[in-house]
Image: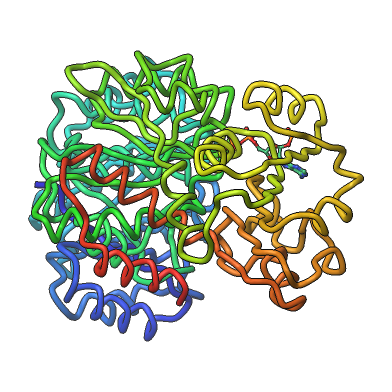
Length: 496
Ligand code: ATR
């Protein structure tokens, strides 16, 4: 079983003690980072290790090892020796310390039943697999109780090196740091890391990419996971902003399904390798978001009829080792629009010409709308208009086009929280008679939606489409229908 360790970073002894007390009530282990405590002295150790010292990992990283301890090596070692004296359950010491110090601390710890975690951190990159294995072998030659390797994930594909490294090893902790390494923290149980680290509260992480204990346990149900847990995620360039994890995970738990769903942050240049790994590791499926909805088709085994017609997929499902693409954006957009309006013979203006636009145009067309497409890159709008037999126009004509339209839909990612102050439509372009829908849901009230509201338009926020398309995805992955009232409740929470 993987142990959960809350890592504590604080500047005073009192604060580290208080936080440790709280963390001990929650987690299996607590790591105290002495290096962040101002002017830490040997005498302070006893004040920190008052409660359950056997469940406490003491670490004191020097600046050269990515920590905050500015004192000399002798005083740093003295703090660690004192922690052993005071009954600390574990000491984390870096392999970069002197060989003699490492050997001394290991033999001292043995006398006191303290366990030694010999660690190596690389805050810049994840080296090649062979180099990681070499680091492991070097550390293993000291015969510590545990070995820890934490590297920085420059790409999500670095996570797969970590999983490979974990294979067949016991008492080994391996983590990829940073948002691109999230998977190694969330799936630590499935792939056999001895410990996964979490922070006590948001903004208090001791390493990049550390998620909170609350998120790990209550959202990703870490304690309920095991080797058989089926892996799902959302593949996107900015997937960390996705909120769909709040819709899917609670419902797996409510229905007793052994699945976990989390953001998979993938750059376009990493997609081919990522999909290879996805296949090799037997992931169960995924959602697909900006900007991969079209390109990902090159790396899967087939599309269902609707996704084929749309030419984009937002849902992958693995069946009999084949990765199949579906499209639930189309039904999600329709359901969201139908909450506010009928569609037959309405004039709809679609802004954008990417994968999401394709699904929405397909939906509008099916319902009998007259469609005009505008896009930053006119050629893409033209190509789409030709394919779906609709009109297109120059984005410079936006004002006139909006006046003539009943429904306006932004299908681009403009207004998402990397650029929340942007709107492709200025406020004065809306006349109040349009129904305005944005597919961006983070933030819920985008600038576009705000402008539309100010001008008296009816609006449809992105969470409505998110919710309806998620219902379709859930069915594809699990075969189960979601309770609509329940998911409405879940979606409402996204607004809080
Ligand atoms: P997806 O497949 O998820 O819809 P995409 O294919 O990258 O993602 O499509 C993104 C859409 O948003 C495109 O229409 C894009 O316009 P271009 O075709 O000109 O690239 C549009 N888009 C993205 N950023 C934009 C911006 N800053 N201004 C205007 N349009 C933008």
